[in-house]
Image 1 (spheres, rainbow, N blue to C red):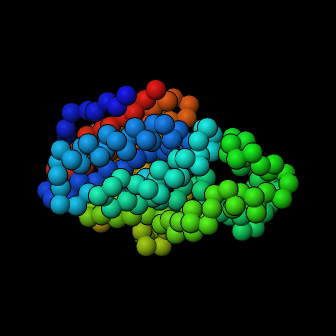
Image 2: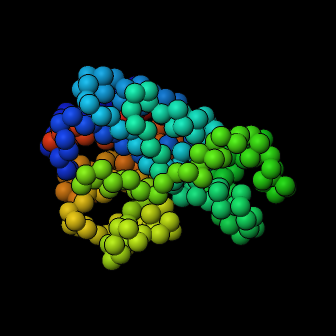
Length: 245
């Protein structure tokens, strides 16, 4: 089921010929992501913009039952749109460990969703797992994961997974910040550099707050709550889309 809010004034205005939709943390809920893609495609069809952008804010994997399918759906994207997936901290950790296995980092991963990822793939994380996981994901997906950006700016909208360090220029933000930060970011009130509005996920919330003039968090804890959230922006208006089971 997909629920749409009414249109409301956008956090930042974009060109009338452009529509942008950002999707929050999926965490293996490929069923919700599939339904969300269909809903967004329908919205793009109704708007018929000159340019449509679909942005996944990262954390497609771990915790939920279908990490691999969630990655595949993000890779495919929405037909006719410019699709972009940002790297979340869970994908960031996967790539780190594929390149340089570390026992302590593995323990932290398994305690925070990695267990479900390895169970889905049928791989023992305590064995020689790197080659087997790479094989199961496939060369194209591994290459795609390595290509994922940490941020995307469209006009006055900045899309990141976790947030920013407000004391550091945007072009000098690190992966550890953009994919992992919580405080002091979550306590910051803005405004931010060059009047940017920041659209992010990473920190689960029970309800998306659309009244903040400088940032919007779209992580509604899809794996735990069964609710996946997305934000659609068109011209000077925006609406919230949510899929749930």
